[in-house]
Image (cartoon, rainbow, N blue to C red; front, side, top):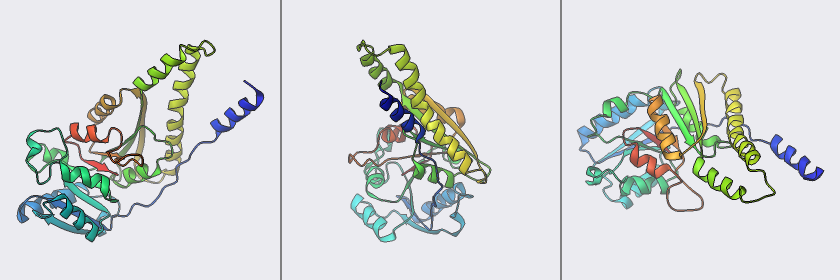
Length: 282
């Protein structure tokens, strides 16, 4: 390696993103169900209790659509007309496919991809775990495979963490992808495989940990405890295990991908499998 290469590597290693808090506004909240009016209002009351203590929720304007917007097009038109800062709904809206828990249903899937507003995806009203799932937001987890620099994800997770609660920042590096690249490196004589394994793994985990440190520094007066889970693992099973282990009340994750129409990364399989965990989908 030349001196120029060494200098460039040191410079790049020293350059790292730092977290700067941003505002999350919840002025208008839209609740969409396929229930009749009275049942719908009871469900809205549950949501309001669940979000009690969330930043700005007390002054929010709530709008309810119960049994309306039966088609996807009608739902998107309603969202466009109301221009909410948050949409609250549940899986398999206006669909009987909840009997086969393998999809989110057309309404929820399209809503998360087309609208700019975050979608709070909640357990269904007929879920026997609803009371347990909608207690509070004391334990919030933000998950990503690229934490460093994702200030919007952190901002929303922080805003939805109840004062005095715990915000966990989870970053899982896919060990399958890592091992595939190490297998290729092992076939290149000029590169020491053991050294590459050690140094690359350390660098992959150092960057999100450094970002978490900058988050803690910026949130000293936020009134929440910030913890982190920065690990290597099989992403889907690792996130699922972390959620179960910590008894997470709300999961915050990105769903949009600039490079594709489909839902971002692991968002869809997690949303399908963790049906009893409320999710804030950005």
